[in-house]
Image (cartoon, rainbow, N blue to C red):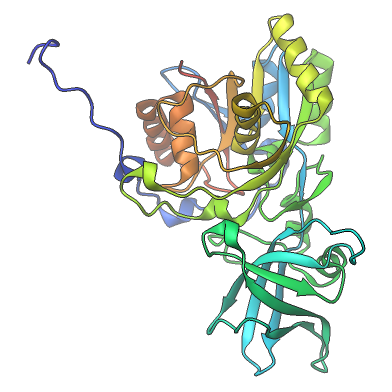
Length: 363
């Protein structure tokens, strides 16, 4: 068949982002040291196996690393209904406080329970040994902006205080152990500043203070954005036609100094390197709308024209996930799937506590 009469490629479907992963490669615990994890350098056709601390030698003076400085909160809290039925609440977002009301008392949350309570029900949360709750939550209804997945609650205590005192680290569903002190420190970046995430920006977990100091000494600049990662980041895509997928929304903010840092990087001919897909989504949301803060439900799939990011540091993602689609859009679908095959053959560690890869924008 000649090029003149060849059929154009069919649009990518959900199956195109699938791959078989041995369960043993799902990292259940972090590497011994943050920067001692592995790095798959996928900027060229042939992948190169590296150690993460090698990134110091891969960037030049004048380049700009953009981090997500969100802070993971202990958003998973256990409780029970008045009838005694056990439940688990995952607080997705603490709502803004209207004038004159008690701060941080209204939340939207996921609820894991055998039978959903009726509107108006009171839930007893974080019970002590005597069965007394640390606080109570009243169900006000479904949260309308989340496609029915979230519930609206009014608490009788400050949500942030209750999470800090009684919550658990919201480890991803594929991590099977109960959270412990190691998770408190290692499922958090060393530069986390703004509380609000229920999942870590995992590509940034590989950076430690000595590595950041070495990058600074090399002349590599850094800047921060904030995107509060939601549990929706783990939601599977269920529609074979990926364009039909309903993307979750997350809050973001880009400080004025970061906008200035990107402009200065461009002016001096440097490269913008996003640390993690959350940084990419934040920067591209700003590029598309001009808004430096708000909610974003940007869904990046192959064919998207990137406007800000030149290189991307990212962990390995779940099959059929929106993040697989994002990195395929960034580096090319065929190249990404080839890199994943290499990573599996070389027994890289996958997902949140796993290893990482470095990608270049394909176009």
